[in-house]
Image (cartoon, rainbow, N blue to C red; front, side, top):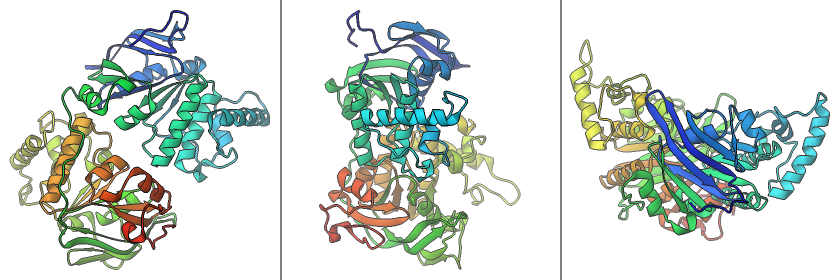
Length: 529
């Protein structure tokens, strides 16, 4: 990277940062120079060491070796309080907010400046009104966090950091739960922050956003910093190759789908949770053999409940699900095992919570949910040789690394855990495959592999329901895209008519002018025109 004039030190500089956790060498002799008032991207695969490095900068971890310089001066950051005192703030991927506190109360929590709280609240209100005006961070200060949409909650996190004096702001995967329009606004906020002299470190796996938002980008691989680039002088293909160490095909190749008979449908499917909240509201949809139906929407708008109901994990409150010739309803409920017997595979959204058991070996996770099938289970005992052989076969077919059936599931990377789960469900050759967040937290090389296999399954005649918060993924893989908002279907659009603007508006419950009613499909579940 270019060197700044001696009279203008780097906002942040790392020299020889090294960190080990036992046998794991998480950071290897890392150098980094971040000019002030710039947006600097940090990218890398899972396990590349990005999070460890950010946690060292923010004081969560202490480096085993190396120096951190802030404004040209070496600083010892023993904890996050010291990092904050030196002007470093961090917005975590999962927000650190108290739901039943107001915005104002959340901002001053832990930063009260006097014994009388009302004085702190008054001072904080004045300062926050100034910050909101300066940085385009308008947010209702007296609103409860639980009443705010996720985009405004993120602004609160940024305001918290600025209120504490942050001049270097670290953002970890900040767009994962935002609509495209909210993402665009966030980038405008970044520009406003940069113009006011704030330096931003952006951690994301979305190469498109790196190219759109940053001035410079640094690439990590296997704990080391392997390259630095000026963003204007690079592209997706080069960044992907630097991340993985080989050429990566980013485009999904597919021919036009040839959908056949309906293999799964819902009729006024409604689900009300234990708190009395309607999570699904009269959802009507179908999936045909030989097509991928994508479900788009901001996280928390009913997608999770939909896929869980279809998988037998939730019982409908009213309405029904039809799979083949079987009807499932409140009067005739099913179960995950019952749905599985109807030739439905399920890749859950949260692989660690529902997809595998971390303490199990890989071979045990490879048959989870199918362990009672006769090929694995005898009259008295299971069949360990058959289980091991099946796991070895799946690992070879799906390139799961390391290929060790006896290794504990928790010791595999996220991408390899995901490939094992998908392999387990796919290799049973179901008529319907429900896939939730297939590439969440997955390396770009594994994403390429998983996408290719999903299209192969479609072309073999499987009906696939895809739930993903990644719009690029939805548009690349789907033949039809259904958009959900607040538990209902806003509308449907064919993949060849979809783009981020159209889907983003639908995700906000607005029917775009670009679509006619025939283009958008059924919109009577609450879509606006």
